Image 1 (cartoon, rainbow, N blue to C red):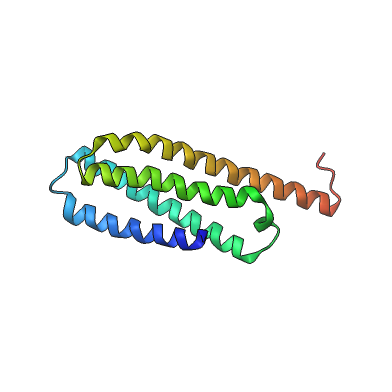
Image 2 (tube, rainbow, N blue to C red; image 1 turned 135 degrees about the horizontal axis):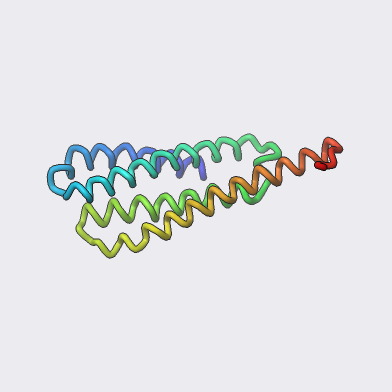
Length: 136
């Protein structure tokens, strides 16, 4: 499911980027256009990360068995949607109150990155234990 949602988020990033460039650029302020392009950029980058996590989980190797990897993927999806979609909707429909969700999305994305780092540490430690290294 993470792979599917990542692919759909990637699709939305391209579609909304085109819509912003060709349909909204002339009707929104320069500041709002910059907001939109930041949202598109975050959407695209994190879609690629989500897709990568989805592929890793499909491989069912050691990395895929670490629960923090799955949670990282889930939170990347939630964070990307909160961050980017709040900006998309706020600017497109002139509902500035939706921008209150943007920092929540940003913090969620930061937590996702930390969970990904924790996943790497857990896997590294498992590999050390399995190979007999003491880590000292």
